[in-house]
Amino acid sequence: MPHRSLGASGLSVSTIGLGCMGLSGVYGEADDDASVDLVRAAVDLGLDHLDSSDMYGWGHNEEVLGRALKGIRDRVVLATKFGQTPNPGGPNGVNGRPDYVIQACEASLQRLGVEVIDLFYQHRVDPAVPIEETVGAMARLVEQGKVRFLGLSEAAPETIRRAHATHPIAAVQTEYSLLYRQEAEATRAVTRALGIGFVAYSPLGRGFLTGAIQDFAQVDGRRAAHPRFQEANFAANRALVAQVEAIAAGKGCTPAQLTLAWLLAQGEDVVAIPGTRYLPRIEENLGALGVTLTADDVARISAAVPAGAAAGTRYPAGAMKAVQL
Image 1 (tube, rainbow, N blue to C red):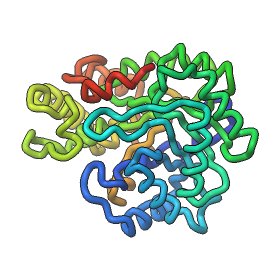
Image 2 (image 1 turned 90 degrees about the vertical axis):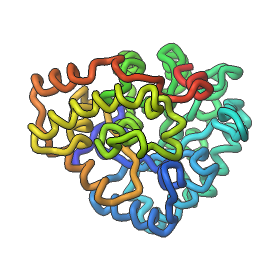
Image 3 (image 1 turned 120 degrees about the vertical axis):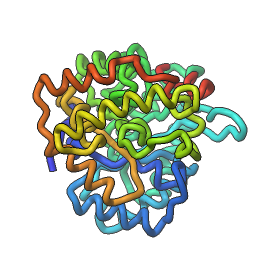
């Protein structure tokens, strides 16, 4: 399994990891026992980068992951996130107050059943709390040995600079795929300059870029709330995916494999954490590591799905207000 370093941090992770959100029923019903088996099988395949959050199932995801890690904790890089809070009926709240940072970490450690978290992210920036105060509290967790490395998710470039000046940031997460890449590439300009690793979440466009969703009638659950999947935008985005499918067929790989190979070809600073509930999908995703793309291939794929061509924002309006802060 190839690994990449997260910037200059010294932390190395499998080039393709596992985003665990789907193990908490976000994209369809999930079975906890099956999820435990999936995580353990993924680790046996050499995948060692596991990404969770206290928001996924509001603690459920971490509890399931904790079960899966019993006896194999030393074989994985364990990442989790804090900072989003429940707000029934509306967009999630955010909390970046120093006291809450400590409280959230203690709760995550207990649910995960571990003594230390390898990579602890602020999931969403709290605009009401200076980033220096939030990261300062996160840094104290490093000093106490409860966290090894720090990360940010969906932070704006200037916020990243300020955070990194407070304490070294090992990684920044942002949605990054062929469909949505303008914000991510602006962020990467900063993370590369600062020696910070870049973790691409939703690298398969929440399943759109796998080619599995061929018809609007197949859109359900959480995806139905995302503008990219709504009827006004579906046909335009489906046409972009068809371009990916055609190139993949010519390369003798699946659309998911082509999409991941394109992403990883963007630079050694990039790692991906596609999510799934199914072992065959993990095996398919890992197959992307065997797809060779020339510079011309990468350019052709980029041109087939031009930056900014996707129809619809990547989150509903309320959630869009919480990203890139």
